[in-house]
Amino acid sequence: MWKISSLKQHIQEDMFANVTIAQVKRAKKILMKKWLDARKGQYSRIFDYQLELLRSNPGSTVEVKLEPNQVKPIFQRIYICLEACKKGFMAGCRKVIGLDGCFFKGATNGELLCVVGRDANNQMYPLAWAVVEKENNDSWDWFCSLLFRDVNVLDGEGWVIISDQQKGIITTVSNWAPRAKHRNCARHIYANWRMKFKNKEWQKPFWACAKAASVSFFNYCRAKLAQLTVLGSRAMLKTDPKHWCRAWFKLGSNCDSVDNNMCESFNKWIVEARFLPILFMLETIRRMVMVKIQENRDKCEKWDDIICPNINKKLSKAIDVSGICHAVSNGNNCFEVQHGSQRFTVDLNQMTYSCRYWQLSGIVCAHAVSAIHQHTNQLHGYVASCYSVEAFKKTYAYYLQPVEGPQGWPESDKPKPLAPGYVKMPGRPRKERKREGTEKPKATKVSRVGTLIRCRKCKCTGHNKTTCPGNAASSSNGAATVGQNAASGNAARSFTKSRSNAKASKMSSSQANVKTSQQSTSRKRASTTDENFGPMQKRENKSLGLPKHKMKASSNIAVKNVTVNVQ
Image 1 (cartoon, rainbow, N blue to C red):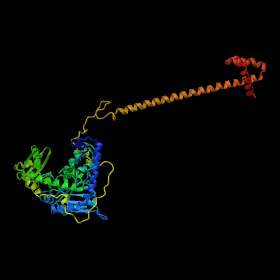
Image 2 (cartoon, one colour; image 1 turned 45 degrees about the vertical axis):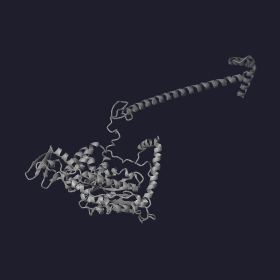
Image 3 (tube, rainbow, N blue to C red; image 1 turned 90 degrees about the vertical axis):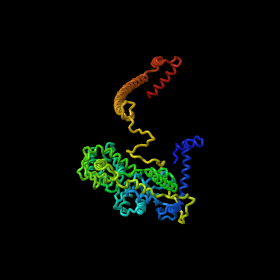
């Protein structure tokens, strides 16, 4: 699937056109719409594709299910288990399978369920896959019923099934294979546990508990974890450790895995195919499996050893560690092995080991190697036969047969199913899987984890200027200063107000005195005669600065006003 940046680059190189990111996005949107329209037509040929797979690969299981209680036929599910995959798994793989589901990335609506085995080289072996509407109890029950019938699981005796904690898987496995040992992926359990206990120092003690091969060592590791977090050591027991800790795994399965990474690897392997419409996607997955089988068949022809290469790498590491182990024999092929402060017993006659790792994985560990070297230098005889090159060749001895193109498919007489409803979720769909906190980031991007951050204000490390501790002190000092200013401002305002009130009261009293004096003067003027009034008015006019020609008019007005006021 083209990415926006790479698509822009190829348009510029191939078409000599300089387009913007927005134009590329619109072009991709148009293309995706055409794909969505094309996928609707592909569902109508589901039954034709079923007939072609059964014709080209006889013995395969291809089941198609339509939506029940519908007037028109609407596609719901398809299950595919090819004959070569089925026979190869039964011939050379252990009875260990992983179940998982993943979402589609582009044009196809629904989810992909897959089952993955393990070959002799400890690599993934795709066994079957299915397209369902969603991951629930009903879809997992339908998928597992077909799968268990194909590989003869029966009641599950001797089988190991690894999955996450999806409720549909747990219920289905208990119904169809009650005697199978169902393991839960410890990585998912740790992810849930880490949501409450996020300290990185607790990660290694948790995984030490998960990988402890004996109950006594599990209790020892859990006690170490309890020294760091008592609540964490208790919370890890909410999920029964029988399902995710090696200490309770059944011996003889030759698989000590506590995670479901094989299925995660398969989902990542087919990530490009998950962008395509349904038939293109199924055909892409089938071709990838066909090519993988052929590549592994050619690769094993060059091996000249008895044990597969990945197992030899583990043996080499065990041989290196065995150099610091000291084995003491009792004379009857029984040994006491000292490794630091730890001591274990090894019985070469029974091929048992008190640590249980040898019996769990089928691969000798460092303590067993130190004991075996006292007896012989040949380690291959003490490794389980399921890891041999011969078992690997048996697994990939079967061929997937080629399939015709759509134009050569036989036409089915069944009704042509319609596409299921497409529900568009809000926002842009996620292309990348959401990584957990403990996962490493992509190697193509520079991570900021571990970068030393220095504050630009105080020049100290561990924080930036936004989260600087000095901000709190300055804000508190500023608040105190603001409080002091506010208090002084209030005092000044109250003092000013009191002064203004005093001044106003003083002015009002003086105005009252002036008014009283004016009233008394007016009464005296009213009581005087006209003869005595003239000189007094002249003195008033002179004090007011009036000209001589206006003195008589003003005196008359004043007399009239005084007379009116008196009356």
